[in-house]
Image (cartoon, rainbow, N blue to C red; front, side, top):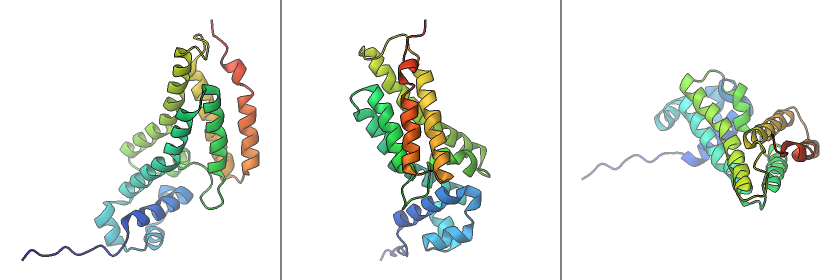
Length: 203
């Protein structure tokens, strides 16, 4: 008779969600193993058996965040009827996401610039790639509008995307410092006022 496997005494998805929230709030080094195991409701041996290592858990938690907030922003950018509306939606939706009372403030991916201290070089590269991914999404959307004649061919989609990503990353830091949704939306509106100048053709 085949030996039955011993069932896990915890919900892996729920444990990962709780680990994500703790890493989001405290960062990789700031989240002590004792805090992680307490939050996840498991002991250290179970954490290592299920996730491999603290860094592997962190990277999986980051992927979970990207599948949530990151995917939501990308979908909103794709669904907007014009590039201008896509950028405006990106910033305004970020203002809402960064200031939710039931989640840590700011963007976990943006905060990984400082919160991932102590991770391996490989993990650092993966996080840099994750931070650059949204800029690529914006640039692709801008190029689509250029191809369809909705933006002038002479404008610089890479520079525009970099500008608005930088604004959004700054909004994440401001949110972590306590800025309200209203304050973050004011930043977004100010950044959108630069749109006409940014989309002028560069000769």
